[in-house]
Amino acid sequence: MVLIPAGTFEMGDHFGDGEGDEQPVHRVELDAFYMDVCEVTVGQFREFVNQSGYKYGGNWANVAKYSPGNDYPMIYVTWSDATAYAKWVGKRLPTEAEWEYAARGGLAGKRYPWGDEISHDDANYSGTGGKDKWVYTAPVGSFAANGYGLYDMAGNVYEWCLDRFGSDYYSKSPTKNPPGADIGLTRVLRGGNWAYDSFTLRVANRNNAPPNNWSYPYGFRCVSGGGSDTIAEIERLSVSGSGKYKVGDKISIKVIGEENAFVTFQIAGITGKEPLLQGMSANEYRASYTFRSGERALNTKLIIELTDQHGNVATKVAKKTVSIVEELQLNRSR
Image (tube, rainbow, N blue to C red; front, side, top):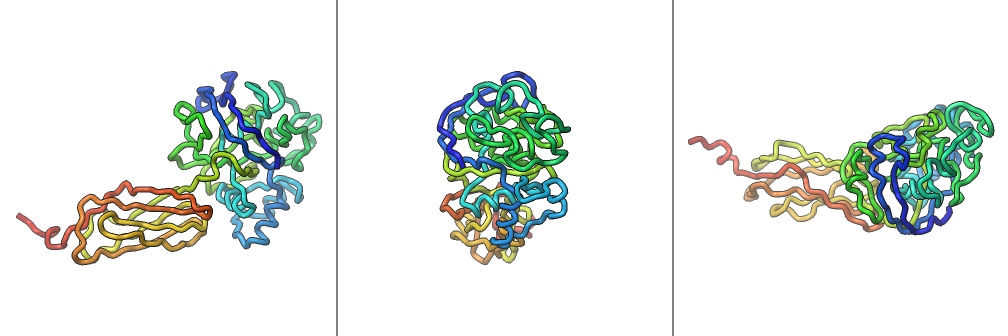
């Protein structure tokens, strides 16, 4: 890893080349952090799977087709795969702001990590020529590093970021250590890849995909330190029923969030904090509760609290309010 110094920069598209989600250009201030010099390799990810017992859902034969050696970038990884690896090595994924700041390598307002022009001598992208002799991915570190000593910040593979994607996020992003959109069904991908043209290799270019998607150009690298180590996340919350219950009814709760966390639910005014148990995967948690005689509430709140492995806490209140009404009252007619 290499230290990326604390500092400020102007984030976004300075040339008007890209889509609207790359605007407006805005000032960002970041704490110092460390970043992997290279993308995570096939060999590193395979070691993680073998030693941790992690259930990788991809196909190693597909990986080998495009990344045919241990020193090539790992591909066909989901955001969840990348996050699991990062946690195993005691790191995390970079925020989108950290990624762009690091990719710029200390240069201000440039189109690429090295300047404003590009050729196949600079990076691995669509086609071949110059130093780029690879039809698919190249071994990591095959091209010159940027000003911070980072390799392949443009081309080779797309890199997952920690953030949820928001097309209008730049218009409301906080200045200090922006964590990404509060809501969103997709996660950010940055850097372009071997199959796409040079437009996607611009440091301001943004892409995104659902966190459970894997594809031939998706890879990642990790960071540590900085201003985002305290992020704990509840990605999704679902609650059974209409929100109006009677004595004897059972409510089912499902939470998707951080892996291997401690998760509780509380129905305000009815229960204390009750634990959810791990479901079918390491980031799924489930619980049920049957309403008992004597429990009465109108429009009370269901509160979920998740504590991750580092002691960081995320809280979420269900959109659906909970009302418990006695059966006789529900059936009464006037």
